[in-house]
Image 1 (tube, rainbow, N blue to C red):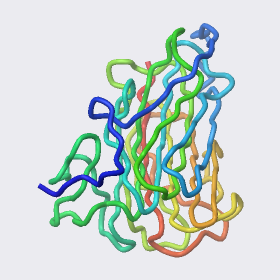
Image 2: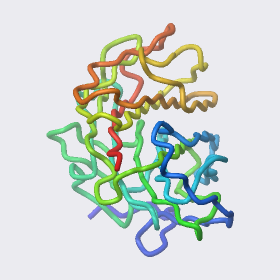
Image 3: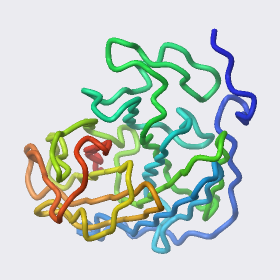
Length: 269
């Protein structure tokens, strides 16, 4: 078994994290039209330690969806008190499809060191996003600090969704690792009326907010960037049951196959 790098920090086989206290208001579940209670986004440049905050309007009963991304470094498959919901790992730009936790063939603690060669192989550290979710309670902290090994850049986009099905928060999810388009084309997913569609894009090059605009019918939820990477989150509520279709970003875009894309349907209660 390949030895895990000595700088990796572990706490009970999950990535080390530190919560900080905060009081959340009690949710008003009668406001059915409110499908999002805000989004925060932050980048930790050249540092494996990242601190991310719950959106200001987060309420007790909301579900937080964390899109944790990184270039050239390890991402965790487990974080204490959070549940993994989706992932897209890349070992090289032109990789045919996203690699997920199920494709890991050499794992140590919360980290995958090697993926199955039949689905791309390599260590999955070129670019990746792991999605976690957490149901907010009155005792929850307002922010979390996650410590990952190494000094490569990490970024996080955290969004709060009300009225989520607690037994099955994620209804559908699909990823794309090389859409071969200058714009970014998100894979189509099926959702039910009133479900929420979240579109995550991590980009292995710097970009401005105007370079990737929301696909038609979606809203800009979150954005963060650094000198050689960028992250975007778009979203919308399903007005009717059906497929989302392959949604394409506006703006000038960027180099082909430099992104990792996730389409995720939040299952509303």
